Length: 411
Figure 1 (spheres, rainbow, N blue to C red):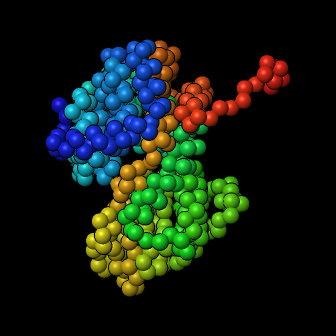
Figure 2: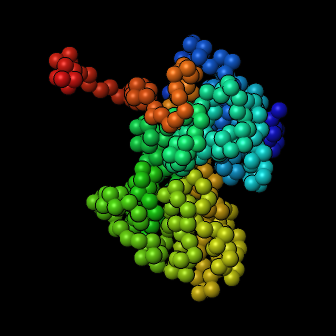
Figure 3: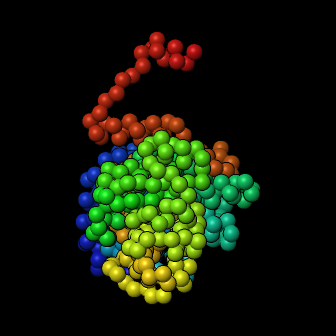
């Protein structure tokens, strides 16, 4: 039985879901394909993923294709209670409440695994950890899962190196139609949507520091430049640092960037990127935001201890007056800013990412007798299918090789 905040909120959630559904044509194609094939009939699926309208569309697709779906969030502040109510009303079992405590959040994860799933969809690796460390949800029926975040893939790669992954997982994050579009264009737009809506400040003329120049960092930096900011990139990877420099951005260590920045966006997947060593170097009025999956990139607890006064400056903005007299501001408690203080990626972008997720769920079911424990790339044909569907939905056609060209390319 679902565990949600208030079932009466369903109508507002339904409006949100219907709006994004109109802008997610790929999921409509996938839904009709799954219904026709019956591939998910009587399959049980657990999901731990940001519970908002676009995710609800994915959950509905899976349920309408015949699966039993149990859903929970992957971040307490990104859960939208009205969307949960609409989803539960249609028969999906939902265990999520906006603002859940850490203990409630784990309780919801366990509830989502109580169905003893055949397949699961993870966003950050929390379900994998529960299954592997506590055995929660593990049965002989468990086939494997899909992971779509950089952070979750880092955690899975660690498990693989240590020999602690006992079932197959698809690396959806590194599919071409995921990281090239979701990570770059989705993150780039949604992070700035959230920051602008939350702060109502001008980006043009500012100095914006982007920590990390992976695909997400590239998107955030690109959009900052488009908004008129002077962009500084901090990195630990020399190749990415060189790429940022040749893309036209200043590159320097965080300790050098700290006194310069008006906006700081962390998007590294690592911890303590903005920490005690630089708090007293930040200028008065600096705005700190995190766009990485977990709330560890800005040392929020250390910032609170360092402050002589903390206060609520505005919804989703906490002010910290430091001993040197400067005040800095942290958005959304240091959690994933584009979802904790915004609506996440655009629907058209998540249409591709969730099409990949759904197709990989089906791939797990089809190949369950063949896949051994491990981390697998998304099959190239799945990636290409999503790209072709996306182009078709945009009214774009492309060239095809002639037979002579195909023979030439293939040797």
